[in-house]
Figure 1 (cartoon, rainbow, N blue to C red):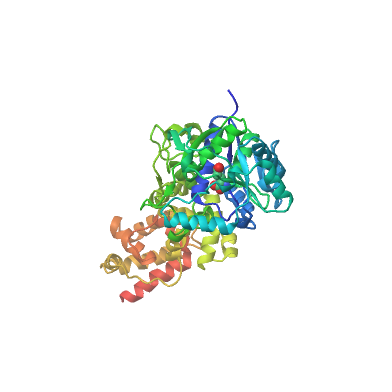
Figure 2 (figure 1 turned 90 degrees about the vertical axis):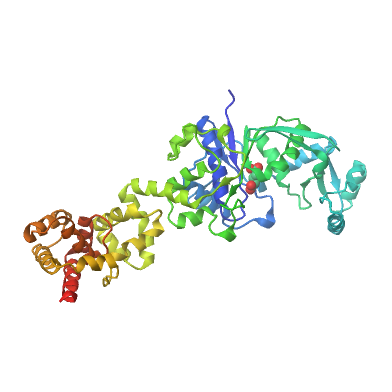
Length: 492
Ligand code: GLU
């Protein structure tokens, strides 16, 4: 069987949209599943939309997500480099190639020069709008004889090249998700293939590149579905075989609207900044529009690769459900290597002002216990500060349930014993912390709930929370004594 070759072909117009990452992911999963190649091509022929730094940013986001590719555009030592035998992989560096095929289309009667001014086209569009028609080029330049057109060009007239679609012809192609798709050419515009600045449009470049780069499957968002007949026509006109097509359902929000910047986070970078783990994002995104046959929901990249296929990609939009993302991400947070999780969490804690980086680094063993203690309660790293606040500052006990515990009759004696036990140790190591409540129990004779609840309330302000021995260790000797003493003083 022919080796499959897939490509992700973003335009460097800014950040990588989370829907774009899903497109990249599905391409990647299929290519890896079939043991094929995955390519990153940069589609930058629309110079007006080019954003400085966007290529680096895209590559960075893919790398963060763990999506690797075999050919195309990479960043090495801060520089953009290209690798592979089908380059260049940046479209603005392939202008001569496109020109050659545009010329061929013109010579063979599949494309024509168009000299219509912007004014005329604006006017035409406005008229069509008033009549309630779909805006479309009216074909004025279609019949200009080629030698006359060439003379006009030689005399310096500005022009574009348009696709010469036959009238009223059905174009049919197969989509691996949607099945047979047929669109009549009467519904399609004579697409501009080459602009007056000599740059091809997306439609021309995408066909030439997919063909020359040996792409076997074009997998992209469904917003391109209506453009595909033009591409299919171009393949025929150039005497090439079309690739397989897969148009992925749009990623929608819960109201079934396109996920857009206005409603919040949509870029991969936004999710990264909020402390989602790449493993969580990837696992979750795979499920937006696809599900494996066995119904599994938690799958790492290798499992996704082995289970993925297009026949289980849905036709209707994939709903982006933040609650479910949080649930998936929380799963990865819980099982992440603690060393790594602690490292990743540092900026969030430092930004919250609760701890300084130097302090964290000096007390990293302690810090790891801290993160390990609260990781059960968080979905993403940005949640950390609100769960560690209890360790810092002056404790004010406001919770009714905690007050109730503290007001029990045996509590003053219990807290005195607690303070004695804490003070009997030079330092509250993890080991000491683990055995401390047992010591208090022995010394005070108080057991079970009567022992744990008031002590927990006194030192953490809460009747619920993380493992008691962890709280004891994390607070350390001075804070334990201070807090217990303060409650004791208030009880007197
Ligand atoms: N450059 C297009 C985009 O940014 C790629 C579409 C395609 O994959 O053909 O979405």
